[in-house]
Length: 492
Image 1 (tube, rainbow, N blue to C red):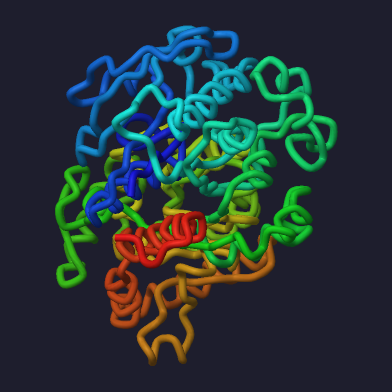
Image 2: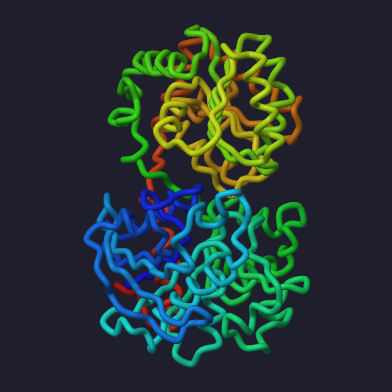
């Protein structure tokens, strides 16, 4: 199958979160299975700089507002996955992140920037595509940034590909003023409750949910949660009406990038049979972060956006109690100023027990994942989550709230689960600080029982966390769409 994978970020080209990890790994896994996948991404400056074997592919004309863009062909630098980058200086070559300016404010023209991404994807998925030698069978787009893709296709006579939307986080919806309907070249008739309109605005994500042929989410539990009022962010009714088209597929991780036995960012390699080396990684991390080099102190790792969704205010509320009991905290992340300042104050008051690093630092994220004794992830909601899987992979048992992909990937430690070998971490239910504190204290008790702790670590490290199974499930969805559309039997 020919699959166009549409994304706003992809590791290692550019990354702000888990979408980049998925976009770097899933297309590579599908290609390993023999599928013909090409990745479409905006031509941010880092993307253009990092593409391997790049060349001008074609000029695309008559696009809304911007007129022309240049499509650049290249390859992912590590996997060789073919990439098509949309080069347009006025849209993408800016300081800041893909979504925010250098001061952390949303780009005011994001509707245009990602409207063009969607429009290009729709054209490439049509009989009018300028790439006449490669027209996709499937256009698989991700989150709100590609959400207008099936809307453009539905209102075109030339569209020929089937469409799949992957929802990585329903909280981000790409809502903007009605005027963008006309500016982006969509028909006014599409601005309707049975279409693009969403509480008086144009919603990129609603367009995707309404028009896509199939919808996936990044975990089975999240697929059910988004159809409820608690987690639906206003779209639960529409999502429930499409329940038969929604499929929850748990993300995998890149097991080459995340492998403690060969991780170049670690001072010492280790695996499930040589966990004594992990204590040396912990010692090196404590030294780097200026923490007291106490081998017995439970070191709690956090690598996260500092946002209400992630529940780290709950950790802040119970931190003094944990520190009084001898724990240490190593945090890497950034986001809401109140949370940043709260953790900064904590580190100033406890400099030998708390380290806070604000920003993005890929090597340090690996070092915290490996050097910490347990990984703390108390999310109020979590579509999938990848960091808890990195924790499993690195023998750093996760402490998580039972929601979304956290519930699907971490098995709580208790007598029964220890006996059957399924215990891999620690889970709690209520999103409040007493529940989190109790869960961490329970984990600390197990931590001091070294034989049992090693068993929990090895259970997690034995989990199959790669992309093979997930990629097969995506492939099955693609095939079912094509078989349904063409009335064929099994497609090879």
